[in-house]
Figure 1 (cartoon, rainbow, N blue to C red):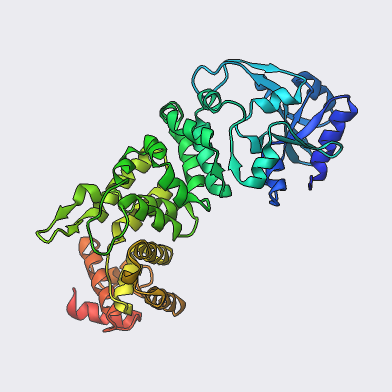
Figure 2 (cartoon, one colour):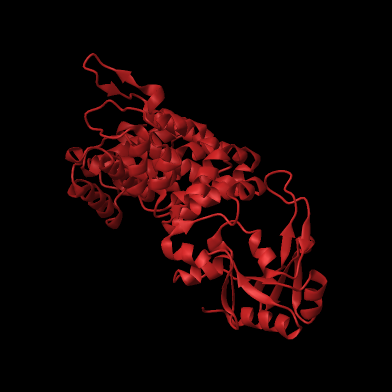
Length: 441
């Protein structure tokens, strides 16, 4: 296992002072999976005051000294070190009422959530595995340490973490743990939406997100009740061979693992049950479900404390995912002017995924979407004008020609932009001003 020199030094300093010290949790798990850890956590038998004495010549930050955690800066690298501890009764399904320090590594590992996270490593001892975490890693299993009901009642966020780890790692949730996840799902109501949303985004960007959404929709519906009705909802349309939830999962699977795209996929048909009308032929229609879905998604994301940039991007994609526009430069320039190049590419990605989630015979083919992407890319590469920002004439130029500032100025600029997009006028200042003076003032 690769261990940065600064972390090695911290462990060695603790050991030379007579204490035990181990790398614990995610860094050990990821190393055994062949992944480079993103951070390294150290656990030690040294109590907080003892740790402070060991590192008296280093810069120490009392990150969470009440709970036994210090951050030591070695060569400006922060290393979080926590005393072995036992968590006493949890009163709010989230935080322990009391933390007791212990000299026992086993007692510390016993309080952790899943066996794959209850692993410790030291260069002298190698991997210490008290609860079968290595075996679960090898077999792709998420299993609670000890009694899953107890683990989830202690900290209900672990319910979402179980789903997140299964999605990100592509693991199965062990039967008793999965049963407890569903049994205790309503405990999620005791967890802050910020923490739950953070886990949801990671879950959605995992390799098995579609599978988890389908198998554990009832759990996710505690956080997002609006999703519950999609499960088993018959779309009653000849293009669809899946219910709304399975279709949603397929769309998630077919967009890149980026939070705004996965969230747009998750919510793109959220309003379908509210918009369903059935014709005399038995075929259902969903008029207006895209703009209503964008409105609903905006409300949900606001409730989940989503950042504004992500929320706006998601809602724009949902609002437009049913739009149909010609594969020709003028139509695409108009769309580019409204949403920009990045959102244009994202919209085509969502539309393609939406089509892939339907019956295969109704997929228009990869070349269909490649053509749209190419036209958009060519417009950008040639720096063609498609927005007022690109227009060769600005408001100041119109004022210079005698136009009074006001709403009419915007109307004139929009009209000039239309002439340029329609290729009736070149995007040249003199030609545009001449046309404006003759036709628009």
